[in-house]
Amino acid sequence: MHRFKAGIRQILSVNEPPARVATAFAVGVFIGMSPFLGIHTVLGLALAWQFKLNKFVTLIGVYVTNPWTIVPIYSFGTWVGVRVMGLDNVIPAIDWSHITFLGFFENFRPLLIPFLVGSLLVGSIAAVISYMTIYRLARKNRG
Image (cartoon, rainbow, N blue to C red):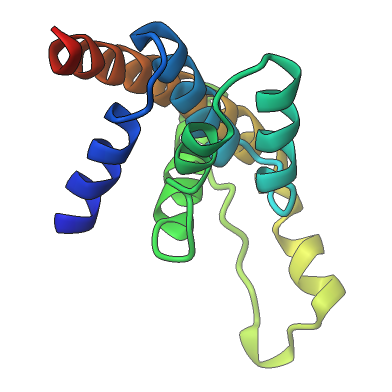
């Protein structure tokens, strides 16, 4: 919890208007929760550069998804995608004693589209919530 509060303090200490700080963080959160696994950092930096957002704040948002949070975030996103798409029985029966690398991806193929849909939806909602939260905190902190 201490690290979380320290991170928020760092975000709020950035000398930019509250809307810019909140936008940078929200873009980072969206990228971090997006299904573009493996290119989050590069994508976050590219968008921060393109839209002239604070790179530091954007990366803090990107790193909401990290080795400790990635499994719950992506599992929840996939579950949301399955529910939104109205799918049933998408979890495959896998013989784990004979699984191969290619077999793993083949078995989980039915979850790909729900993963994409759910991750984008969850990322969008999280970005809106994080924007509103950081904007309010930044205004209060400056006020």
